Image (cartoon, rainbow, N blue to C red; front, top):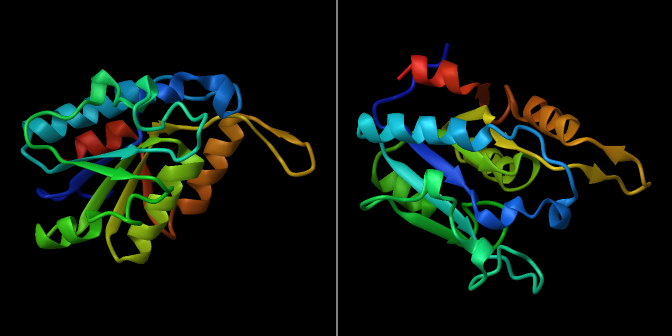
Length: 188
């Protein structure tokens, strides 16, 4: 089992109110308990004085609920930053592109990341892949992320659960170790 370091950073990606607008993002969503799992992890990180980084997507798409200045751009209350927890703002999928996240982690001597957030196959996947490529020991918490239904280029329909499960499978063992919330909490 993966031991969680004393200075492992919890990276909470794009848990914003606009993602509740399911129709905009493709319809049905899986894992409606994801935010509750994220909140449990966040509480444990705060209780053990581990570092937390909040990532917020500022969409450049005119109709996106995540566009800056829109109500949907707000971070959901259950995982809202407290005190001096930094907010990393981005406008692309990876939390490492166009931000100082990597430098902040390196400056703090952090080598292990625990990643949660929305959505599994977009910003969570992009950030997880880059974290692995940058050499961070990366844990992705599978039940603390979620996906939406998607239609393929040929019109085939893929359920949110299939998208979620397939994304986790492609990341596990190559870019990250995928665990569930219970496993992470037991190894703090």
